[in-house]
Structures are given as C-alpha cells and as structure tokens.
Image (cartoon, rainbow, N blue to C red; front, side, top):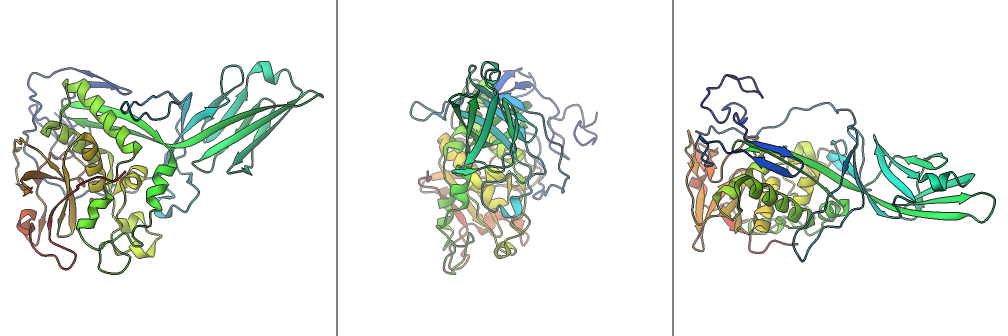
Length: 445
C-alpha cells in the first residue's frame, strides 16, 4: 500500500503517512461548509500514532497558476447574537494569480503572492436593474434588458475614492474593468434616448478571499472566507512599534511580555473560529474547550499556513533582512504564511476566541503558541517531549505551528544546543526577559 500524496510505502494499519503526514483513512465527506461524518470503528478520535518530528518546512518556489474560473458564493456568517458579519446580496469569487492586486499600499515581498478576490454587491443591484459578475480578473456589470434595450446611449463611469477609474470597456448595457485595489467602487450608468438622462447608481466592494482545506483524524474539512482588506491594512500599518522586532533599541518591542499584545481578535478571526466550531460540531457532535478541539484548531494552522522566514517574505524591506518581523494575525491570514511567532499569534487569537486560556511560549530561537487544558492525554511520541508549564496554577501545553503536518498539542521535539526546549524554561535570556510561557491576559480587538 502506498501513500496517495507522496507515494511512500505504508502499511494497511497506518492512519498517517510518516513521510508527509497524509491521512490514509478519510471518513468525512466535505462539501462547502457542511460535513457528513462516517464513523470508523477502528478510529478512536485520539491521536496515538508515533510522531516523528520534522523541522519547519519551507515550501519550494512555484510558478503562478492560471486564473481560476469564477465561483458563485453566497454566504451569511452568523457569529453571535451581538455580531453578524455583513449580509451580502451577491458574492462572486475570482482569482488574480500572478497579478499584483493590492490594497493601495506597497505590499513589499507579498506583492507577488497568489491572491484571490470576492466581489460583494453593496447597493443598486437587483433583478430589475443590473447584475454583478466576475470574469477572470475582471468585474462585469450588466444592465437588465428592460433598461439596456430602452436607451440608445449608455455612458459608464467607475470611481474609487472619488477618482475616476480607467480603463473601462463599455459595450452598451455592459461595462467591464479590472480592479486594481481591494476597495469600494461606485459605478454610474447614465442612460439617454435623446430626452432627460436617467442615472443608475451601483456600489460594490472587492474583498480578499481565501479557501482552506485540510485533514484531521481521518476527515476532510474545508471552508471559505472573505473580508475587507482594511482589516488587514489596519494591522499592517499599526505603528505601536516602529520596528516589529524584540530589542532594547528605541522603537522596538521591549520585552517578551509585550509579544502577547500581538494576539488580536478581529471579525475575521471570529469568523474563522466560528467555521471551525461549526465543522467540528458537525463531525463530532459537540464542541467544548477540550484537548480534541484544541488539536483540531492546531491542525488547521499547521496544514493551511506555510512556514516562511521573514527575510524571504519581507525581502524588499532591508530592516528585516536579518531580524524578525512580528506580524499580527490578519497579516498572516492575508499572506497565508509566516514564521514561528506569526503563526503563534494567529493560533493564540483563534484559541482565545474559542474560549481557551492561551500563552506565548518563548524559547531560544523559537516561539510557540500554548493552550490551557484541564485534562490532557499525552500522545505516544517516537521522540521529543511534552512541553508544558504551570503558570498561576494553570497548566499550559505548547503548540507547534511551524510544521507542515499534524502535530498534536503538547508534542515538541525541538532542541537548542542539544537540549529539548523544556531545559530552557525559566532561564534568563537577557534584559528582554526569561524564556517561558507568557499568558495572554486579554486579547486585543
């Protein structure tokens, strides 16, 4: 028997490929955000397969793929009685592979990243006036025939931030243009047949769009999200620290304790956790802040976000060529990648939203997330240790976010100078603090 992902030989009893982490026995069938759960009698739901540690995996450079055909997505995400993401009339998904489709600011090393977009109709669109669609990289607005066939002249105008957008292609009742920014656009169609012109006004938004898919405990899961790019830009342009690196130099993050301030919960983090909870509940019947749901959340981070060094991701910013850049969660969501502290902050934000107590783990040359659990069953490990610490009477278990396969909560095989990480907990690391678990008291919003 061979692994369907990497081709390595595996035994019929294996649940996971020890080479690539592929799950050998899928038991969930996923469509959209709905899951159908088919229990496996041999599967207990508890991870017990021997784990072989991998160093953080850097994905090879790949060529840009072709544009993906549009997909109609109609989604209403209900977060809670107090917070509901905006209801969309129509949301059309397109793609801009290999194209700089940015947010109005220089994106540095991320400018060439694969990005997808979502067109969201804000106002003016209905069956009697016009439709909004995506075609490859273009946004297309088509007037209803009852309008387009009534008038002999139709002039279109597109504006962003009050300025006209060019070029646009006008063909009677149809207008096409390629948006260059994640933003809100206003469109007017001035229709005339020789008399008084009639003006139709439309507004739509170009949002960031991501689709996630991964395997956990024999099941396949996936969901999609879209969000206003301003949510990302707010964190990208945050000036709390002039330099996003830990150092005693003025303008830098002054100590390890301050790193917990990067655990920020925004509407998109709320939406992601809501989807995770929905998928988990459909698969397993209930969702509580226990070890299994913590493992599920961690698998989402490990298998959907690529490990990439700051010096590669921010190559155009010479300040971060040799230093860490501490990214907020939405920066990591946007880019889909990050190094250890970046995915740590993202994992902690999702854990915090889910109701867990969380911590940031600082060890020599590395950072990890951590989650508090009242009850914990240690997985069987072929190497490594269970990395944990008690802080103020609460036991926190470290969460490795930089691997490209599932690794359960608590499992750690990382070493520094020949010693496992637990050897360094509590040791002095200089004026910036001690190595250890730093509690996230209140996640910022």
